[in-house]
Length: 227
Image 1 (cartoon, rainbow, N blue to C red):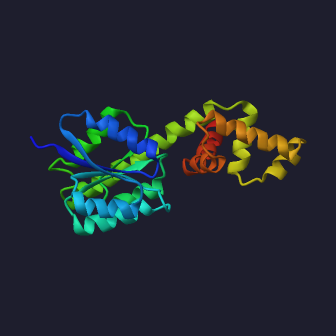
Image 2: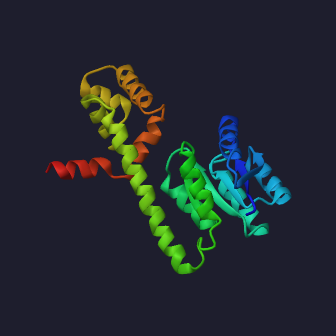
Image 3: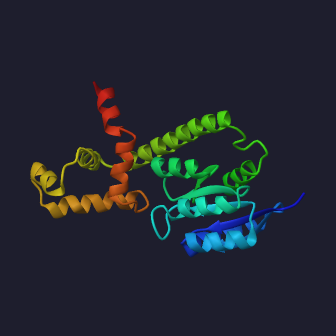
């Protein structure tokens, strides 16, 4: 059996090195190239002609990976693209899928998950017709929603009651100064709480935390359950 030729694309050197090191010991996989930008990915793909590309979506721009993926598929239509994500963003994942990507995996996925994704990508049955494409699209949506819900639960479970209420206020669109006024504290105290929340969830920015909670309608669901 011929080895599956893999190219890894990520603008973070440590992630590229980690994936190269992880995959090089797999007997049925060969890492043939690694790139740090969408432009470099296109040039290397044309040169090396990999079977599968693990492509970071956000590099020199928020959609650099998707743009590069489209260009690569225009000249190498048989190459399979797997989106690499730092966190689940349903809109970008959907955009990647519609651009021709066949799967997505988180950058901290286990070796088993990564290999399974690669093997599924080269499967003869991968997105073979429009019906399968529609079904897979729905499955991807469910997978995204599941991961988002798990991420939301991990965030709120790490928060104190006061921090939980702060997140709810932020999701409602309140500004730091308004929250401080309502709580009768200084704005710096609110900002300190925001930093503490971010530290509890692997330094995810508060903007991403709030957006994730809003995407899941977390507090709307929570409030409905209380009634």
